[in-house]
Image 1: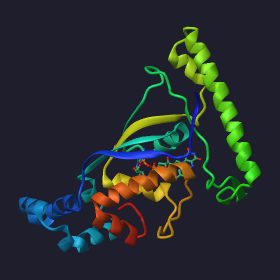
Image 2: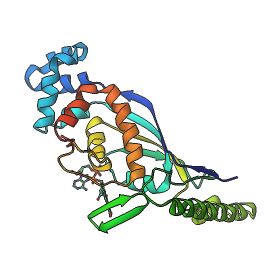
Image 3: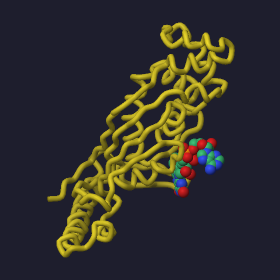
Amino acid sequence: MVKLQSDVSVELVKHSASDSDVLWAARVSTAGEQSLEEIHKDPERSKGLINFLMRDRHGSPFEHNSMTFFISAPIFVFREFHRHRVWSYNEESGRYRELQPVFYVPGPDRKLVQEGRPGKYVFVDGTPEQHTLVSETMEESYRASYAAYQKMLEAGVAREVARAVLPVGLFSSMYATCNARALMHFLSLRTKDDRAVVPSFPQREIEMVAEKMEALWAGLMPLTHAAFNANGRVSP
Ligand SMILES: Cc1cc2nc3c(=O)[nH]c(=O)nc-3n(C[C@H](O)[C@H](O)[C@H](O)COP(=O)(O)OP(=O)(O)OC[C@H]3O[C@@H](n4cnc5c(N)ncnc54)[C@H](O)[C@@H]3O)c2cc1C
């Protein structure tokens, strides 16, 4: 009855986002209403402007676009995600629907052991014994808590009350909408990348979500994405 999953999923369900959106927004400064002509212009020819805006942190031209993602990930990932306040969210409800028994277990590549002091630590591989312990312990705990949830539902207890026994490893789903500037800020904090001038140390599971989002965004706005990387992965 309990389904165990080690991966997260991200789908781009709706978008209006391209490199030319940055150009016409930026050029209104100098060209006024004529900047609208930029909408159909080949953005490749204005690559330098996108790079200049990124480098000098002229951020607002990167806001005239929109991307909506459908994300399926454990609740502990959403808890971190929702700290990003300039996004819009809608999540499935534990009050209005029965939550499905899909739970997170770390995959075999997930590093399991933390070494060093807070703020200066690294994660290293777990032993095969630790991997087995984690998988078995989580599964056992998930089965027990989902059985407790079902027992209360069957006795007529409201979903919003019974859900209290479910752990943060339970999968949830949500729509998350942002613009490119907000996404870059999110990526700067939720990915670990050698090109970043300000390194971040995100939890691996939210990084898995961030990596999938970044790949989808890079397909829509390749010049903006390249300028983000070339300028140290700092949101403008
Ligand atoms: C590695 C890591 C570890 C973390 N650990 C913890 C932790 O232990 N405990 C914890 O509570 N949180 C933790 N956080 C969350 C962190 O403190 C931020 O809440 C989160 O990263 C969102 O960042 P943000 O506020 O910049 O983003 P957003 O909310 O998306 O805001 C974007 C930008 O808008 C501006 N802004 C938004 N709201 C305001 C406001 N009210 N006032 C002024 N400016 C605003 C800021 O410039 C901000 O950078 C952690 C984050 C990371 C990446």
